[in-house]
Image (cartoon, rainbow, N blue to C red; front, side):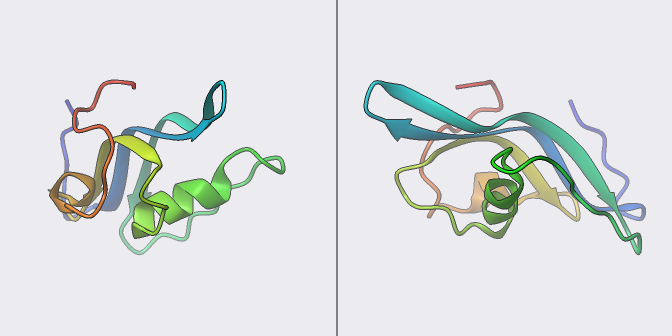
Length: 97
């Protein structure tokens, strides 16, 4: 369970998974990410090429293709925007797919 202090946190990702179905299995682009972005604080995400930085950003913005499986929570100011965005298909619980 994630406890949120909306005065301090603008964006919280909890156990976020983004998987792409491919012939023969899944590509696990984002696999169990937990991160907090604090109010009025600049945060950068770094990593190797192909590690999922762009997919993470696309999941936050809700612009991933419809066929992509998502699960977890994306809290924006204490509201789970992943759970309330009905245009996002995929997993509905916060357990790994």
